[in-house]
Every structure is written in C-alpha cells, then in structure tokens.
Image (cartoon, rainbow, N blue to C red):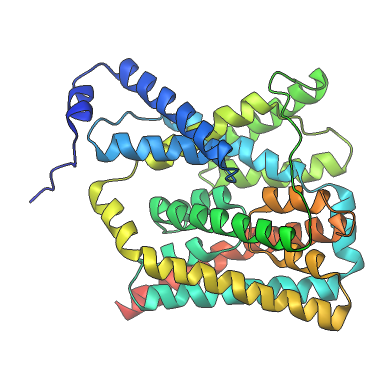
Length: 363
C-alpha cells in the first residue's frame, strides 16, 4: 500500500501548476536558502540550499525533474574542479613526505571504513550506503559515485553534508583556539578568466562526459574529467578555468538532482538514523584528532597544521583557515587532503564492491 506524501496546502496547490512555475519556486527557494546558509558561514551552501529546497518540493508532492545530460555535465564540472585543486606543487609535496602521508591517509580511511561497517552491521543504513557515507572528503564526489556502486545517493548525501557542516564547525573552533580569524576573499561572480583556458576546459568537460556516458563507465562523468584534467593541467596543456557562476549553476543542478530523489520514506529513514550517524561523525572527527596528535608528538608537526591536515573533509573551510594563519603549513595541509581524496577515489569502488558482495552473502 502506497504512502501518502506529506503535502502542505501550498505544495498541494503547486503540484497542479505547470512545471515552469514549480521550477521558478524551486529556484527562488534555493536562492533564499543559499543566502541563509552563506550568512551562517556553512560550507557547501551553494549545493546545500538547492538540495534542501528540492527535498521540500519532492517530499511535499510537487517535484520537477532534472534531465540526465545536465546532471552528467554538472558532474563533469565537479570532476574538473577537483582536478584544478591538484597542481604539480601539491603532488610534489606528497612525494617528498610519502611514508608520512601514506600512514596518515590509510589510518583515516581505515577508521572511516570501520565506522561504515558498524553502521551497516547495526542496520542503521543499508548495504554500501553506510560506507560511502563515512568516506572522508569530496562530499559531492562520494554522493555521485555511490549511486554507481550500489549505494543510495540520497542517504549518502545526507551523511556526507552533515559531516561537512560538523567538520567545518570543529575546524573553526580549533582555529579560534589558536587565535586564527578565517575569512574568504569576495567572489568575483562575473569573472570569466582567460578565454582560451575557458574554451579548452569546456571541451575537456563535454568530451569526457559524453565519452563516459557512451561507454557507460561507472561514475565516469565525474571521474574521467577529473583524471584527464589532472594530466592535462600538469602537462601544461591548459589551466582549468571554471567561472564562479558556472560552478554555482552546477552545484544547484547537483543539489536539485539529489534532493528531488527524496521520498517521505527516505526522509524518515534519515531522521531515524540521525542520532547514530551523528555519533559516527563525531567519532570520526575525534579519531582523526588522535592522528593529528600523533603527528604533533612523533613528527614534530605544528598542532593546527596537523589538525587541519587530518580533518576528515570540509576541504574548502580547511583551506580558508589554513591560508588565514601564518603558522600553518598550507602546502602540507592541502597535500594531505589531496592525497586522501586520491586514495578514496581509487579505493572507494573496490571497497564498496567488496562490502556489497559481503552483504549479499550475509543476506
């Protein structure tokens, strides 16, 4: 027997209106929520606002639908954005301290996997969803990849962005303890950058996305532009150029695509799991703090540098805080965050497949 949607009078009336009007309401609600989240200094506000607005419309019975190709191209833009943050200087920093980076990265990932296995074992979240939800870093990438490898994108996004918010708050608190005042530079929304790089970046994204979709590569629209973008940028073929307005539009598309998939049943599942998911995230942050202490104690790393480097995600907030303090080794922090992202992107599908087979055998 089907479940009746939790409709309000406004949403019930909106459901009978043309799609263009529902899109207009969704866009205005998204802008309003982005403004609220930006005022609260929340990370990923440009994605969270549209996602929350889309959840309200979907659960209220007045959804719209994002077409497959815009969704795929938005993933390609995110892949290029991640590639842009991996210049040769960061990769060289990883190479100079390889044993230290390998040890710290693997420790964080092992902790995240164990917490994910516990959430799955306690049946708090189904199958590989718990694992993708606890993977540290690149929340948008984890949510997008999860659907290609057996996870529930909606619940993964719920976990990942809850972690992003909590990690950003924790990092801000730690920065205040070290008397660091974090603040981001004003965004030049109308900036387009170098036309040549903009054109080459667009060609890279479109070509990789089309190829990934045609070849049916799992999570390919995200991963193919990421991999080829890193190679092309570090080979000097182009400088990845993503105008702020393009990024904002793609974040909105991704937020809508994820949020519009929610149902009342999924939302109830998310709220039911909330206390234990919060516990798992707090445990992840605390255990990563333990790894930071080990860096301070045994490797002589500055305490704030160590904490920011091992922080499980929230890379944008971490980067802002790191750049705001003269005592923080920014190259070390971003190299550690980048190294962990690369390992998660490489090992995530392997671990997810292993857990999927394990769950099937147990079932």
